[in-house]
Image (tube, rainbow, N blue to C red; front, side):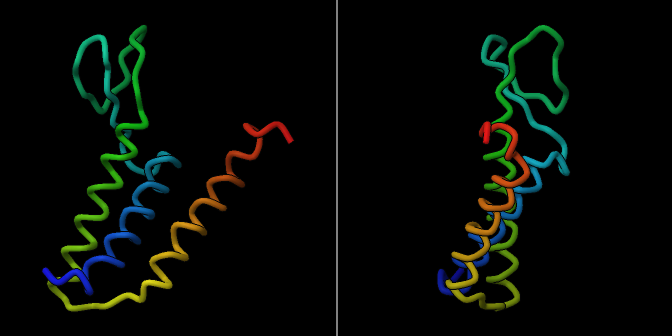
Length: 102
């Protein structure tokens, strides 16, 4: 795998998968610290950490898109790889605008 091909694609894949996870467009993945277990289903009356699932989906998206870029030899510009996460941050901030209290 050449980093020139896989790096920008992995960045775009991670940002895209993170957005899909936070908007709940992929199955939720939860970690239950008191039980020490992972699940795709929420357990009633047990506190869960969903952010770990968001990171897990992000890593999977980066691995998949990075692998595909290295196999197909598709090259993305680093400018695109930096623009996509910025746009994702702005988009997620706008979708969660009500949390900021403005």
